[in-house]
Image (cartoon, rainbow, N blue to C red; front, side, top):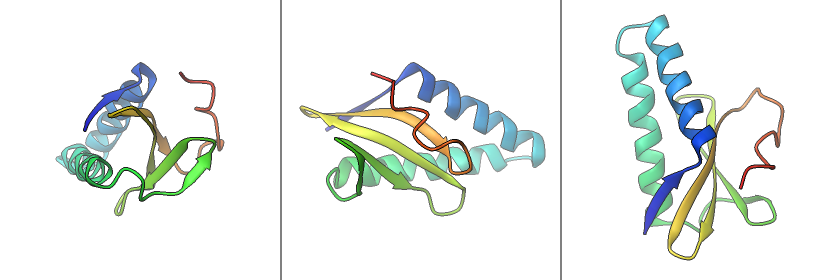
Length: 96
């Protein structure tokens, strides 16, 4: 199974990495590693995480307060958001 980022999700990821790097050297790299590990878990077990709205699923990261919002479309994981958990819930729902 492969994965693709929605352009807005890719921007969220880049912004979060940059924000963490401004707070501590290397923290952005650690955040990216956490996201990559979560994506690997999603690819291995795509149905494991709970549905949050229709066919959208949410995988929480362990160390950072973020969730990966995704859906499964055929054999592709579509990552719609790298969502900070304190943001307005569901802001990503209009993304296709």
